[in-house]
Every structure is written in structure tokens, then in C-alpha cells.
Image (tube, rainbow, N blue to C red; front, side, top):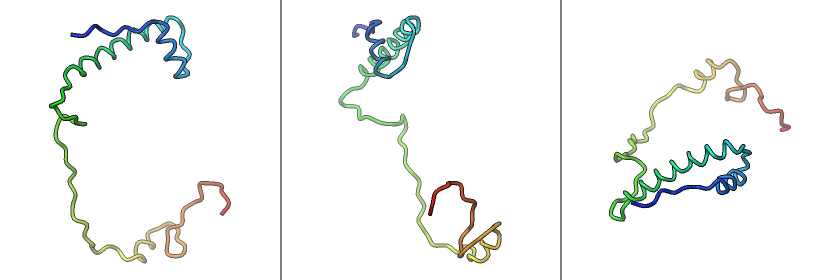
Length: 102
């Protein structure tokens, strides 16, 4: 088993600076411990990952279920527009939400 990774106070401080996160000394110390736990977990997973095991995104095999794209009868445009609160030029009319010039 590999030696656990331990981040120094300076390394965590540099990471925080790169991420533009301002942390107190107490927060840096706490964060170092938390990051060590995360890095140790990644190291354990890396040990399990073998070349003969293909990478996956899910534990179970997933497949999309598609149906055939079939044209089916629908409501005529006049009937649909008759149910709309407002319509214009055979389209739904909706309130303007952006104040942009046309």
C-alpha cells in the first residue's frame, strides 16, 4: 500500500490562492486534513483500477430506450390557438421579457 498523501500548509495556501479563496490559518489547517482524506480515497481507487478493467461511468450497464419517430395526428393549429390567451400570425403571443430592440 502506498504512503498516504499529506498536504502541507503552504500547499493548501497555494491551492486556495489559485482558486481565489481567502482562508484563515484555522481554515487552511482544517482544509489540509479534508484534502488529505480526499487524496487518500483517490489513491485507493487508483489501486483498484487495473488495465484489464474498462472504465465506466456507471456501475450498471445503461442503455437509452428510444421509440420510433412516427408522425401521428395532432390538433389542428386553429384548435390549439383557440386555447391560447393571445395569438398573432398563427403563433402564440407571449409577453416580452427582454428589453431589447428588434
